[in-house]
Image (cartoon, rainbow, N blue to C red):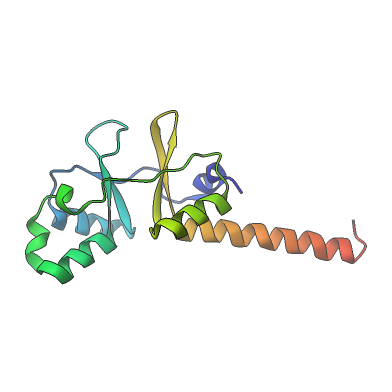
Length: 145
């Protein structure tokens, strides 16, 4: 399955983002309200400054306590963001996420941010793919094809 197909199935159609100068507490509240695990960090436009995940916030809370919630998002965000293309396969994206040990990936097309996929999105797509292949094999073995 291609990333573009995964994006088409997502319930949140818009890209959730915060500005680099926003407080971490505001970003954490947004993550909670939207029930998502990461937000894109950017000013207006399609350029990505970074990504801030729940993991980033929890890691900093563990190191420095709740005072980190008053920090700017830019202090905690990951700025070296890996991205994928809508034409990448679920297997390719899953491998990139596994190798990089991250769970959210921006999708870029022609230099523009068009969406974000999570490891959950990719795993669900892969399961669907495998189930389809299994069903087709079962039909073939049963002589129905």
